[in-house]
Length: 171
Image (cartoon, rainbow, N blue to C red; front, side):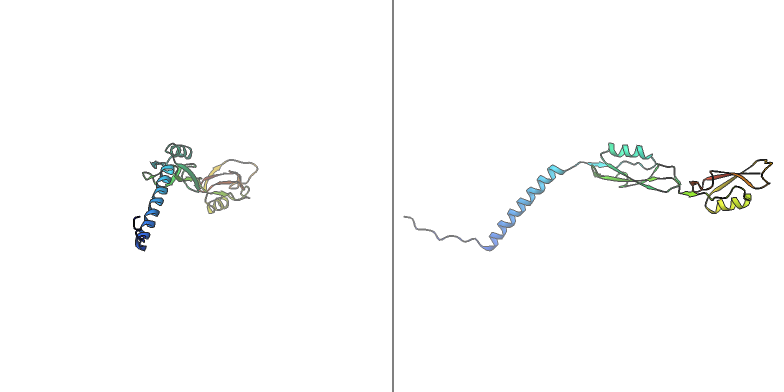
């Protein structure tokens, strides 16, 4: 019979290196497989600032992106895209959400009530104080004294965009 060789013991450093190497291989494999199944292509974000919201949403969807609308009060026309994030030209993963800031139009303000029958100057002052532009139209009236308001358009108590024109018809 052959003489038995004494069992070789692995040094702690060698054992640690083998365990570490094994972990690196396993983690690398997991990352590779995950990347293969979840990778998505990169797309450039199109410029949609200045477009109407419906057209901007369609453009973003066609590019493989997900539009999200945020409305803000603005003097710009309603439904106009004012800003976007991420900005145009950036390269992002497909299905990235692009937030578009869209004009909701101007802030709406309640027209003062009690203008009909009041003095034209008083009515004008009250309307200007809450942000309206005043247009005065004179109309002869046999029943309403001179310089008194006959009608208001839009009517008192209703709401209109800040900075819009209110017409006072006065005698």
